[in-house]
Length: 226
Image (cartoon, rainbow, N blue to C red; front, side, top):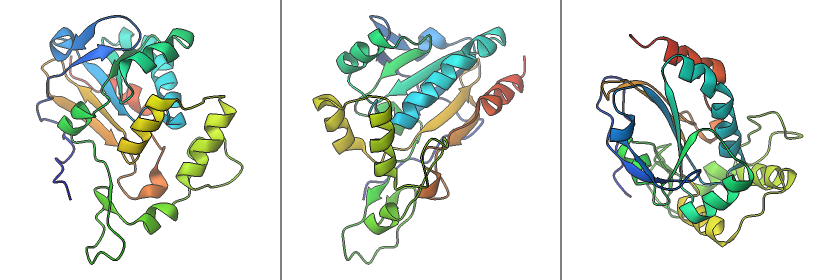
């Protein structure tokens, strides 16, 4: 099993990055954001309906955050060409960056679960390792849109159909390679250190799709020392 870095904690230095942008041409780097605080969310690809909804939530609170001097950034692990096509039709004011290989997710320590082989004697250590049975037994309805608690992959299928979102070849490839990538939110201080963080589903797969609320993100931004 891959030895994963633990999620960065408040007080630790935020790693640098430079990634292609989905909602305008070019790249944005850590250096471009330095000198002012920013919220950054690390998401699965566009195939994840819960991630798409959270990007919309970040867009909704961006004016409040900007008024507090805090920028808003989202990183998705969809290839930039696919992401630019999607967001051309569904614009977002959030600075949206693409990392199809999840290098920045790893750098910030956002976990991804690896499935233990059938019959393995190892004990699962969620969120870093899991049995397929453990994942199949999970039941979620984080946004309240589903008719009942459903298995995560079934929940994705239903919400993608509701959204009329059809996975293309690029989405299918990302889903195949990074299906178990979790989501992480971080608030980075103007001096480049982590001020606050929240990682999805740390207590088990029943927490998949549960992300910080708008109020929680705004409160974290409001607690920054000026």
